[in-house]
Length: 206
Length: 141
Image 1 (tube, helix red, strand yellow):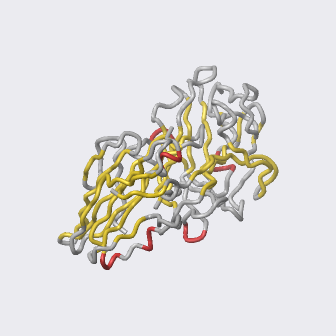
Image 2 (tube, one colour):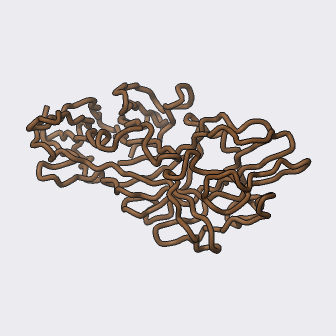
């Protein structure tokens, strides 16, 4: 056992805020919104491009085909730097889902977001109140998607990746790349607000 | 959710074959980074926890877990927090500590998973399935 003067024995662990970019134009988000003060729920899947938690512009259930929410561009931003570095970021859900007829898709690619660049930002578009553009049509950097609820703590999605120097986060303000999320709704869905789901980032720190 | 100050009570110590040690923090308050560890003489690696009451004049650092390395074994060490989207807070954290070595060309790992919230320590090889919070890990580095 070692004995120290009080306060000497301090290490730092990293801290992050989860953010959503929205608005303005491709490559330059209008707002970088911290989501933890918004809810719960903290992120809504709606047919407009904003971070407001309300019941306006829900995703209508279509008689046929699929309606989509506008895309959500999510990432982690470092607010306390680690002693050495953070990497190996992963994403997972509680695996339960929103129920019949509703899928939460996550992009298999991670558009670039760093402390110095928003190059991978694509403003969410579509027909307000009706449907967003499908993610792979909307976003040039995303070519395929997977049902987010297939990713659980025992089998997480590897990503979002990191595009900062050396592909690690080691300073305040540095970020992961974007994780793009979008809800897809078909005719078998039932109306109403759905139960909040838990989404999680995991990372390795040394 | 796990309090950040509580998580910061966990720290590492490298034990060298020449009987010296390198701690994550020095008594002057400065910090040693993980790459500062001299792998050429690393004999053991441990995780300690700081204990102190609000009225305590001194803090004590007690060794919680230590792994000894044999020749040919590489150290595995990672902190693995999970951050809740809704709060940006760390909901849970595992500390991974163990060894990796090649045996007849096959990577063999032995890893202890320390649950920071409960203090539970579980030992496993490279995880392929089973308990949901034990996840396959990288090669030792």
